[in-house]
Image (cartoon, rainbow, N blue to C red; front, side, top):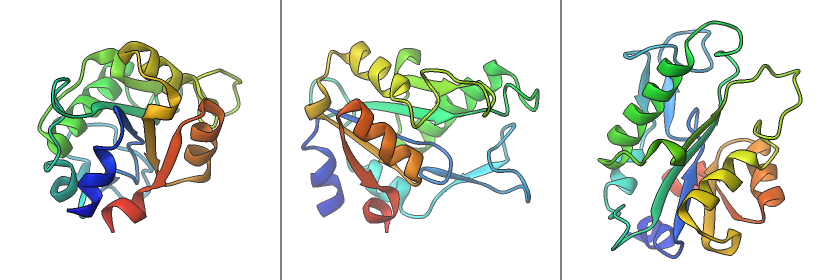
Length: 164
């Protein structure tokens, strides 16, 4: 499959979560606050389960997600992390170590180095794996994702191009 071939050209593939890998099934919520409030987007499992996400045979896996609803008290930091682990398992059949699952829990109006479009989450994941920006692909659905990739020096791909 062409999509899987694209991903295996990189040593690290990092994905945005909401509207890239998952969508919320609760009307009015841009991101899930608990289990059962999300589903994988069409095509995600078909593409990502074709990849061997082991360190020996395939690319490393990471997730980078703005999760400001943590700051507003809609869900706990622990629940947001759990939902990212659950998402990785559902999409790829594997769960990377917590340092590869980055989220920004800060409110939208607070300046920080991790909230996309800042590159902090991507840089942390690359540092964890010891991977250079030129060896990294970030997949997302929004302009802030594309800008974060540019600021981190990584390649970028639109989720719609990857998953259809």
